[in-house]
Image: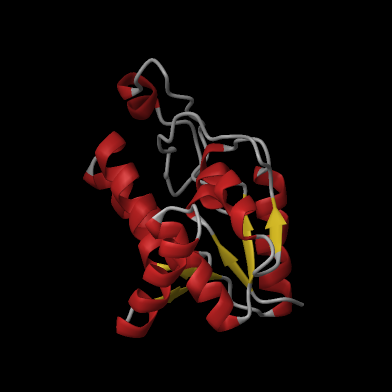
Length: 173
């Protein structure tokens, strides 16, 4: 069973039930059954947190943090060495700085990247990538994040016109 590191792109697909979310859920279930902790880079976790807070506020932000922790992710910090490695990768490849942290972590941990972000096509030769969907995520919004996984009218009322909301918190349980 390969060690996997999940990109914010893949986890947002899961939380929003975007195209490819079932594959993300299946991979997380495989990780759980094999007792292999899924990885998330702290920078990518920060992306999920700030997007959720910006679009849905403090309550939703706390829910997403709790959900990621409950899903058993091992959160990888960004120490000085990793900052230098990510900077080198960013300087060499057409990827975002956050994606450079994910890539540096994947290379260091010998982990398979789970993503749908097309930017990773630029670095496919460097590591293994498990593609969930290469479709662009048009509007990153949040999801319900309710512990009982029921529809959340509060978020449906606050949605921006471009938003696509779902009534699931993205938990794989």
